Amino acid sequence: MSDKKEVSVAIIGAGSGGIMAAIKLREAGISQVSIFEKAGDLGGTWRDNTYPGLICDIPSHLYRFSFAPNPEWSQTFSPGSEIYDYVRAVAEDNNVEEIINYNSEVLRLEYDGAKWRLETTKGDQGEFDVVISAVGILHHPVYPDIEGLDTFEGDCFHSARWDHDVSLQGKRIGIIGTGSTAVQIVGAVVDDVQQLTLFQRTPQWVLGAPNAFYSDDDKAKFRDQPEEMQALYDWLAETLNQGFAAAVVGQNEEALASMQNGCQQNLDENIHDPELKARLTPDYSAGCKRLIVSDKFYPAISKPNAELVTDGITRIEPRGIRTADGRLHEVDVLVLATGFDPHRFLADALILGRRGKTLNEAWSKGNYAYKTICVPDFPNLFFLGGPNSPIGNFSYLLTAETQYAYVEKLINLIRDGVLSEISPKAEVTDTFNDNLKGAMPNTVWASGCKSWYFDRFGNVASWPWTFARFEEELSEPDLADFDAA
Ligand code: NA7
Image (cartoon, rainbow, N blue to C red):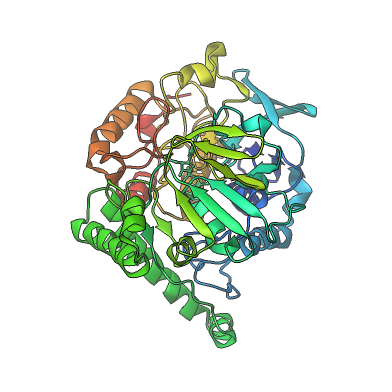
């Protein structure tokens, strides 16, 4: 029998992070684990996004839980539905569904000096020693504030709310946005539609990485020789860490230049019309906005039935979109590929910490945390994918597992009776965040573009250092950084 103290844990969100945390908590011997999920299904962003052409821009063999390597990935960058199936299978294999409370959006969390009382849309859910927020960042769709949007008479939906009852076959489709989502949709639907009009506010750099299929032999090899699959993982992780992830935080100029050259080469080789090329060429560095990976976009936008519109949108009318040059672009279906608000976290809930302080008050000048994990005055509330988590083109699964391992160590301090309440010291948290802000100007994200990495206060909300530093910072909790209680 364990002499550890029993703790109860509430996890908010049944996406990849929440599912992983539930599996690992139970493995660690914590039996009282409940997940509260606002929707009626698990899978997070892979549940919400079902648009045609959806793939993950992280190589599949890197985008997996460490404890569930998957020999069956179909492609270098596998389709979203396959990732959803993978996350679901991992949850089922580990009996996670039995602890998920669906349609239970957290409305209120109140710390009473010892425990968190949790209330959802289904009412009072009782008290928990620890709360882990795994709410993700890509699930609050942003709808554009364009005059007349509600007057459009055709079908109109956000890319994350794709209406599969609407056939695109032979229709005129308009797409607003040129992020990863829009780029993937364009490549997937251009051959089905009569006319595709893409409304671009800002051009994007696109890396033309091919999306190869794994053969049956490849999959058999990964199945029979797991060490081969691990070797591929290690190579991908190393390549991304040392290359891209270091480049975007100013630690690898050569890799940054090579990324820039790769994007330019993709543009040069695939866009032959100089006028179109000029309009597709960004005026900022590659990597400043989240890098897009697609070998389909440029060929697709060059097709005779595709048009890139770069005149600004002035308003939306019943039959289409009016641009600044006075032209009305008539469309039957309008897709809003206008992104997400990644900075909301728990903003829709009332989170009351010590002395009745709310999390929204604490974050009124911007979200912050100690090492991305926890916030002063909100004891035993831990974040996976929290403020300033690495959100450059990086595997969230890898990030979340690294954060979880640290959180488990914090929870063990409670289980072992070392501390009863864990909250970081305010001054240590301030120093951490001052350093973080000080490092931000070295990153490519701050080099002169607008992107969803910025919060509403104009601060970049990513991790400004290498992934190695992330792992190092989260390797072992330093008790001196926490309030003694
Ligand atoms: P993104 O990357 O945030 O892209 C949103 C796009 O929508 C972007 O091109 C925006 O232009 C455009 N946008 C947003 N509002 C408007 C208005 N009002 N008018 C015109 N254009 C607008 O979202 P995605 O869904 O593509 O990708 C999100 C992440 O999901 C992606 O990075 C991957 O990690 C997966 P802007 O560039 O701001 O001028």
